[in-house]
Image (tube, rainbow, N blue to C red; front, side):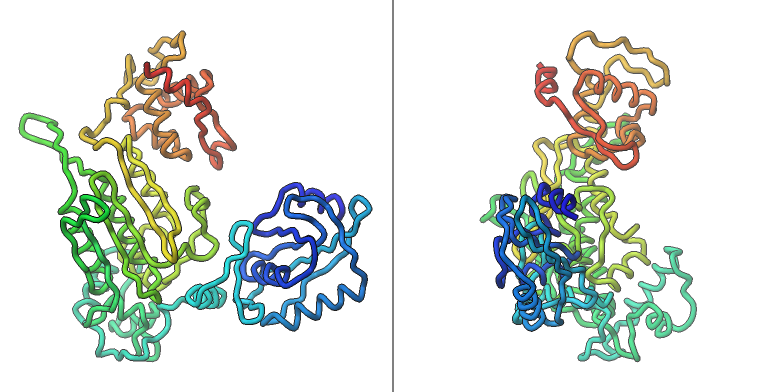
Length: 475
């Protein structure tokens, strides 16, 4: 046990570990935060920097602490407590598991562990955490002010047709029966999801969208309100009307349109803002279009255990805040797979050389930004064209004897800098080259010390090692 505690201390404080010099109310707040998240351990007798200070505590003190924790938490939590000795000093180890029915309160205040600190929950977060622990969502509850006559038959018919055409569910029987099976009707009363999707009147939620010349200068704006499928389509039309378009001549009689941003990525971001927003918040969903960037803000921070860092990986687990709304867009094939939207967005912008994606939690909401330095005007950027490369799968290229990179190598480095989880197959599609050609260039970059593979082929990622060499090679 002592060895394990020493290992924990060496790791430092985290979302499951906290150090305290002495027992007090902040210890109980932390235990509540752990119980409302993934569980965790509090080490009493250790300073914030990991120094073992020790503590004087006997059996009577421990029992008093247990009673104080029990009396001041609701539902009551009882941590596992053990006294261990390290470097001739006593340390008290308090451990709690994730509580099954959340949230747990300390004197009517609610906390959740976020990174290495305790975050006090807002009323909305308290409600969401409770619903989440019950595996329910707000949109699955009946709307007490609505009746079945509040639903528009035309919207339901269009939805069921799209479900049938999508092939993910065999639609049979009366529409009332189908909606009951999906959960959009409960005991003949529409749920919140049903009203947002099929209501006769527009729900009281706005999507505010505008074209800005500067942060304070608005060129055009629109307030979109309606049932959710209409909001998505209207928002996409408005965005498209303000995008710059480049034209690439492919033949004497044909040309290719290249939009300022990849359209599938824009649609994913609009869907994300509409499907996953917090509908218990009065704040508007907002889209702002600038000269070289576009932002998407939706009320509601990341849901469940999802964090910004996890979102940047390709193996994050997503939980739907609005389960029935997400299910509807999945059934109509507007959403391909739960939790894969940002993976597809990152892949879409790979063919836009100077474009980046950033995400952040801002206030009580979530903000996504697409931005670029130079507009894409060709389907294959110049930096992606290989020098002295052929399309066959043999080594026809002589090795460089200098550190200068070929155009193909520069393009691969740029793609890795934008998406470190990119695969050989994705690079092959991006550069329109065979897999062997991609593999050869990757090997050469690795030999030059420019990139390296971290982890396994399937679960790892690429890392650019020497950006200085890349910059020098451009000279």
